[in-house]
Length: 120
Image (tube, rainbow, N blue to C red; front, side, top):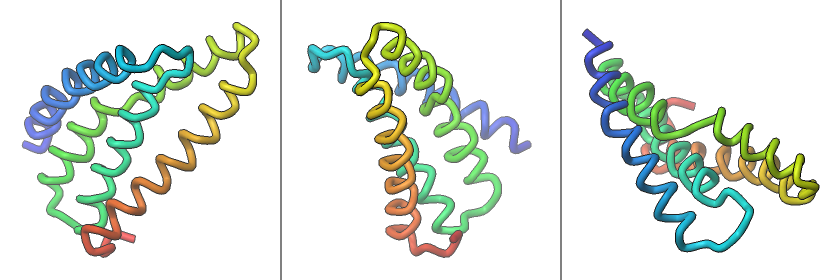
């Protein structure tokens, strides 16, 4: 029955991702993909919480696989990075890659630590 929890989490994560991304991009007049950057950082933090708390598999299916799986997006990150590079914005493309990895890793560690760090 974990698949039902995954579906329920994804049903919240996907629209939340869209709304967050649009709201952030509207506030920033920039070619840098701030919406995806922030959404992925937030999703990494949220994923760290159940991982650090060592929650039951059903809770992890709901929050980790479902919510965070639909909230975060590697494909959009990759596409937006490619578009920056194609437009000659190599510094921004590189900053997106490095920043996304470092901020995402930091966010998941912070989430796990705040939850008790049991999952690490």
